[in-house]
View (tube, rainbow, N blue to C red):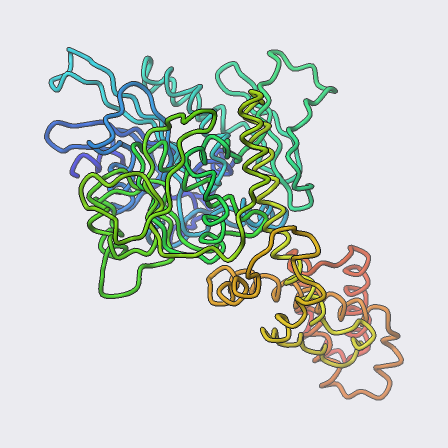
Length: 580
C-alpha cells in the first residue's frame, strides 16, 4: 500500500499530543466541516498496487496505515459482486489509536440532545461510498474504477448518500477543484443541532434536514419546509437523515422480521450474505434500526471483506463468535463462518406473485459451502408468535399498490411498538428503584439506587408486562431471561443507572439550595464547612458540564451559597479556597 503515503499526514487539528495554540488557530477554518465529516477520500484502482488512496481532503488530515488500508479495501465491491455503473453502500471501521479530533468537546453537547441511536461514534468511523465502474478504453484494464468516500462519525446514512449523489458524478467529471469547492461549502454549514431544521447549501442545491432530538415523538413525520425563509432555489427536503426504506430492505425476509428482531434484541452473532455491498449494507443497517429507540450496543459492519484487519478476530474458531452483525458478499464467508449460529443468505430480489420471494427458515446443517441457497440458517426458535395481521396488511398494501414509504411507515411503527412494549416494563421497574424525594435531605449523602433484581422484575410482569401494550402472545418471560444475558441489557441498564444517579445528585443539590445554610453553619467546624464548599463546587462543575439535569436558578443559588460559606471562613482559608 505504498501509494497510501500520497494521502499525506493527518492534520494536527489539536489532536492528542499536538494541541499547540498555533495548531488550533490554523485548524479553526475546518471546525464546521469537522462537525459533519472527518475527511473525504478518493480510492482508485492501481494496476500494480490494487486499491490505492489517491486523495484525502483536507490534505493534512492524518489517517493511520490500518485505517487507510481498511478504507481502500472497503471502498470497492469485491470481485464476486460484479457491480457495473454507479453503486452506493456504506461500511464501518474501528478507529485506531483512540480519539484524535479536537471537536470531541462538542460531542457532549450534541450527544446530550440526540437520540441514543444517533449519537456520534466515539471509537468507529462510518464510510459512505459512491463507486463507479464503467468501460474506458483509455485505461489499461479497460475500466474506469473509482470511489468517492465520505468519512464521518455520524450515522446519517440518508443525508450522506444524498450528498454523494450530488457531488460524486460531478467529481468524476471535474476532479479535485470540484471536491475542494464542496468541502469549503460544507465548512460553512451550521453544526448539527438536535431538534433543529437546517438548510445545507451544496453545489447550487439546498438540502433541508431535520436533526432528530431525543424529545422528538418517534412517529414517522417528515420535516416541514420552513415557510419564513424564501430560499432560492427551493430546498430539497430530506424526510430523514438516517432512516432507510425498511420495506425495500426487508423485502426477502418479511416473514422472518420478528425472528430477526429477536436476534438483534439478544445481540446474537449474524452474518448477512448478499449479492452486493449495497444490499449487504442496507440490510445490516435496517436490522440495527429495528431496535430504535433502544441503542444497538453490539458491533456491526455493513460491509466486510476478507482483507479487513479484524478478519482473524471475527473468524477464529477457538472462541464463541463475537456479538457482531456482519454484511458480506464473498461466498467464501459461508465456509469461514460455518460455526456462526445465524446466517442470512439473500439473493437478488424476485417477485413471487404480489409478494417478493421470501427466504425460508433452514437448519444450519443444510448450509452448503458452495451454491448456498437463500435462507435464514439458524437453530433459533422465536419466543414470540408471528404477527400474521402485519403480513396481511403489507400484502394488501402491495396488491393495492400502496406507496412504499407507507409500507415502510407501517413496518417501522410495528417494530417501534414491539420494542417499546418490551422496554416499558423494564423502565417502570427501574423507576421503582429510585429513592423517594422525601428521603433526600440536604446534609446527608443521598440514598442509593436499589439493585435491579431479575426475579422481582419477572414477577412484576404478571400485572405490568408487555401484554398491556402488545397483542402478541408467546414466551415473553423466556425472552427477558435471554435478554438479561445480552450486551443490550447491560448497555440499557448502565445508561439508565447513570441517568438516575445524575437525577439523584441534581435533587440533592436542589435540596441543599432550598435549605437555610446559615442555620446549618452555626454549630459546624471549619473542616465541615470547607468539606461542604468542595462538595458544592464538585456538583456545580458537574451541573455546568450538562451532566446534571438542574435549572439555571439552582446553579446561581449554589454559586451564591459557595460565596456565602467562603465569606464566613477566616481570611487564610478564604485565600486557600479562592486564590487570586
